[in-house]
Structure formats: structure tokens, C-alpha cells
Image (cartoon, rainbow, N blue to C red; front, side, top):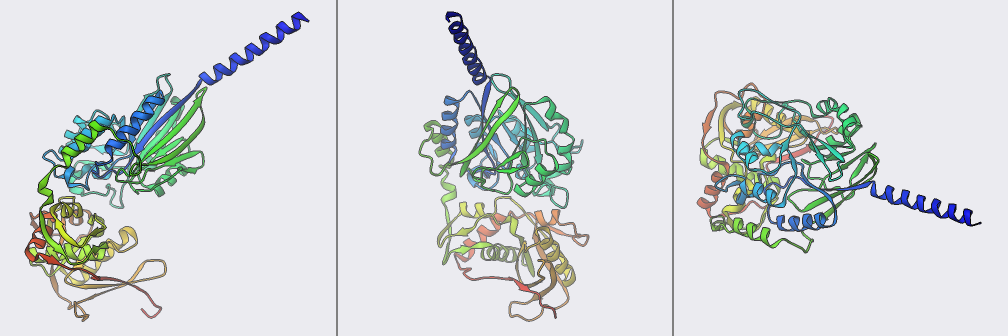
Length: 483
């Protein structure tokens, strides 16, 4: 009897020890992630506090960015060293890694290189090719990180490309660089899954492309994404891959939790923390932010808005009016992707608002185009997103669109609704459109060294009170059978 009791006691002890061992062999990893900050710095003190809290309570905590650190806040974009405030704050909060987003090139390659040299974390991108004609001289496409108990995390960086095979930024800033299809590039890294415990794609592709990436390349455990500014509250499962993204402008931070045992993932989940509602902040980081924001130059009042200037139609009308008034052209175009504010509220207009509206520092190009070429330019712009992507001064545009959203007919009219005369016109576009639109008749241009924000700012200063309520110059018309 005593022997049976003894055997039972040691068996229980053995099973208990196995349970303890099993628990000890499980590693929990926290990856905090942000994307598309676009130079917004005000929530960095809250992010710092959140990161501190997780680092205090968990052994293995990482902080990733899925790209687009710059462009959107003049406090950062117009700083004496463009972009420096974001990088210094990311260093302060101890980011581990960032993929390259399309807006990382907005300041030019030399500025981006200087910021990468200051950053205490690496930037990765696997589908970029560097030639001797670029200022970039080397790249990291893939990186491997380790937890404190030696669990390996492989991370592959990917950037989006447009139909012109470049990321969505001014191609003039991409000299000497070429870009491969990100989904095809990822396929080349399939075998890397075998040498890492967790394989992550850190992407700047957009949610729809991330879903395609997961479908075509089923070896990723997690895709941490950006570019589309998508708020995925608990992530999205595609096959065996968890896709996560944390909105934009540092309104959210994602908290990705991965548990791994015996080199196998046993659970993975993601939640978003609303930083606007988060009530803790790091005082030291807050002081740094306040110092950056203390720039009275941006508070200068330059004019008055009689009503809210809202949406692409009204804001685009303001921008194209400024182009026409400054350069004296017949027609001016502004791409909607370059309109970066949703609204200028009624009341005083400040310099800061104009830099927020036009943060890219584009200049202008003037062409001589006939009405047929103008229609081709409008159609090319529309086909980029299969929707209207242009605003205009000097003419009215009726886009007759079929049920499948394709253009059937373009009608150009004067402001009095009369048909536009078939002749040659002087046409102004910004330098992004001039470089990105692959139209062979865009040649023999006259370059204007006027910065877009300065153009709009001077226009508002000149006229003092402006009103664009209800202005709409591009009309979408449902095409009928007879069109």
C-alpha cells in the first residue's frame, strides 16, 4: 500500500513538472505597430507610455512601423531638417523597425538617407532595385529579430507600386531606382519560412493588396500593413495569415500578441488601442512634442474663409484658381491625391492650414494642349483609380460614366455651359502629374519654380476673403444608351 502511494505521489509530481515545463516553454511576443503617421506627432507621448507599460509587463516587446512616416504636418515637413522630429521621436519611443512607404521619398533621396542615418532602427524594403545613378547605395529587404529566449522573427519589407511601376510619389525623386511587383517578390522568400519561428511581412501595400499577398504567398504568419489607412480592430484572417493595420495619423496603435511553443505558433491576435482616448502619457516625450509645436510662424493669419471649404471639389477649386491666377494660364489641373485636407473651416485661414493642404512641395509645369489632348489627360487620370482623380479651373467637365464605372464620353464646357472651342490652350499641372502621367504629348513644357503651398497662400493673401461653398466643376453623369 505504501509502495502504491509512493508511486502515485511521484507520478503526480512528474506530471506537475511537465506542466510547469510546458508553461515555461511558451513564449509570448508583443508587437506594437503603427502605420501612415504622416508626420503627426501629438500622440507620441501616449505611444511612449503605452510602450513603457508593455515593456514593463512583458519580456518580449517590439515596435514596428509599416511606413509613411512623413508628409502631412508642416511642423515636421517644414522643419529646418525636414522630417527630423518624427525620426527623433521614433528613436525616443524605441522603434525596432520600419518598412519604407511611398512618402518616405517626398523630401528626396538625399534627405531620406540623412534621416535613415539618424534613425536608431533600420528601414527595410525587398522589392526596390538600386542602380549606380541613385543616391541610395544599399538596402535591407529582410531582417531577423530574436526574443530573449531566442525565438526568431523574420520580417520582410514590401512597398506598393502604381501602374507606372513606381510607388505613389513624384517619380522625379526616384531617379536610379526601380521597383518589382511586391507579391511576386515575396514568393522568392518562401524558403525563409523554414529558418524562422515566425515569418512576418511588414508591408506598405494597402489592405486589398495584403489580402492578395496572403492568398498568393501562404507562408506568412502575419502581415502588418499600411498605405490604405485601414482600421482593422481585430485583424483579418486570410487562410492561415493574420492581416493587421492600425488606421493612420497615429490615432491608433496595434497590439499584436503571438504565443509560440516548441517553435510552433499556438495563438495570434491583434487589437487596436485608440490613442486619442488613452489617458496616460510620457511627460518627457510630451515636452519634446510641445517644443516642436511651438512655432508661431505657422499661426500667421493670411485670409478669411466665409464658409467651410469642404471636400475635393471646393478645395480643388481653390488650388486651381490659385494656379490660374498666379501663372495666367487658360486651364489648370490638380490631382485629388495631392489634396491632403478634408476641410478648411470658416474663419481665419493660417499658413499651417495651407501647408497641410499641400504638403508635397510640388512646383508647376505649363503645356500647350489641344482639346483632344486635354480629354486624354482627364481620361488617363480617371483610369488610375477608375474614378475621378482631377480638379480644374478654366473649364467645366462632364464625365459620362457607364454602369461598370468606365468613361464613355468627356464633354468640356466653358463656365457659361457653352461647348469649349476646339483650339490650343495653355494648361498648368503640378510637377507630380507632369512626372507621373505617361502621356507622350506632355512635352515642350515650361517649368515654373513656384511651390504649390506658396501659390495657394499668396492667392488667399491677395483676395483676403474667399468663398467656395457649393463650387463643383467636375460632374459625373450616368451614361445612357444614346450617349
